[in-house]
Amino acid sequence: MPRTKTYGQFCPVARAAELFAERWTPLVLRELLCGSTRFNELRRGLPLMSPSLLSTRLKTLQRHELITRHESDSGGAEYRLTEAGAALRPVIAQLGIWGQRWLRSRLDEDELDVGLLMWDLRRRIDLEALPDRQVVAGFTYPDAPRAMTRWWVVMDHDHVDLCLKDYGFDTDLEVTTDVRTMTRVWLGRLTFSEALRRRALRIEGPQELCRGFPGWLQLSTFADAAVSGD
Amino acid sequence: MPRTKTYGQFCPVARAAELFAERWTPLVLRELLCGSTRFNELRRGLPLMSPSLLSTRLKTLQRHELITRHESDSGGAEYRLTEAGAALRPVIAQLGIWGQRWLRSRLDEDELDVGLLMWDLRRRIDLEALPDRQVVAGFTYPDAPRAMTRWWVVMDHDHVDLCLKDYGFDTDLEVTTDVRTMTRVWLGRLTFSEALRRRALRIEGPQELCRGFPGWLQLSTFADAAVSGD
DNA sequence: CGGTATCCCCCGCGATACTG
DNA sequence: CAGTATCGCGGGGGATACCG
Image (cartoon, chains in turn orange, yellow, blue, brown):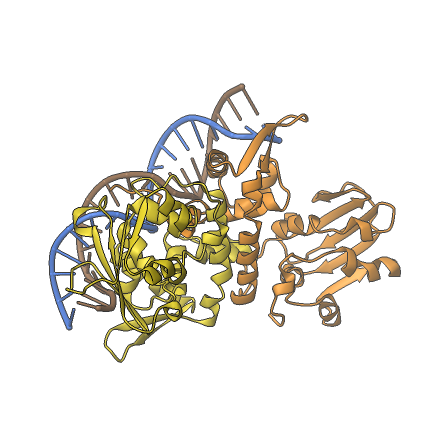
């Protein structure tokens, strides 16, 4: 028997693993489950995955009917999970909970990624909790690579934009911290208040916005499973 | 950056996938979760996995403290899940449930494997439900490869033995069927009674044993999630 | 923007044999 | 029984460029 990608077992775990446990696939599914639909949107959440490989994986997922591909009205294509694909949510969820609980990441240099952090964070803004007007938050990471130190998050009632370039907005709120601190807060390993107390994170702006900040900035969906303290 | 096995992401899903979503690893974990501890016991549940690769995977799992390795009193070594390893049970469970629900296997030739079927089945005998004496069941699969048509399952109060050779036991019970039917029953895709009605499966022996059979032979842990009807 | 095409390396892993 | 050793190949996938 030549090399095959199958395991030759009837066991449902084996059959599921043939699809699911392939390199990058769980992360592609994570992105889709988080709501990304466009190719380049997916790429942004998977910066180290080559486009050709992403393309290959998307085709495989289509072939097995876990996703569909539609030409979008606005041009380009959209990938959406089918019912079968969406049913993988509990698998991803359990995997993430396990990772959060049992994998003590040291969060070193090569795992920290401001771009990814801000991209994830953008998806978890609770627009309901925001004041009923546009709010612009500026994030400054003095320790990030030069081109990535300064971010704008522009939120209005139904939409969040993330910008790296200065679009000339005045900010309502200024957050200054380092990548590792913000990542730890995001992952639930450090509370906002502890980070503030240690002066590892600073929030500046009108008091009601500063007070509201930890409320409308929801943390990672896995933050609950965190073991705090690093 | 050269090829690495990591994804370079802080996301818990990514970190967990680095470990979990490697070829064969989910199946090794499945075997360990089902109670196998010895190298050759694991091999038996993973007949197509080469011993060297199994050895490699076991080392990786040790390195990440998902399993421990003890020299056993009876000679040889035993692999046991640590707390962290055992905590992967929900992941495997969800994966299996998903596979069972959404992957319509046609159960063709290359997935059917009597040896594997009998090996799995052996693990799911409800000894409590058996009469309080030794029971020997004979299984005959006329369609299986010549050396694999005839099986003995020897059950006493605390122990189940599976034999391919005739050890000269008289059997209390005789089951005759084909591999595909028994596999479908095992997976919950076909009920015992339906199989009997179609004469795809025959049980012979004293009436109380025949009646008890579907009760003490528990099905796959994923049978509940099955979509019956094939 | 939304992908393909191509190239090539490298190593995962399958096969087999062998050892304490 | 419980693994190790060795070898060789094939193709996965990284890098990059390019196209519609």
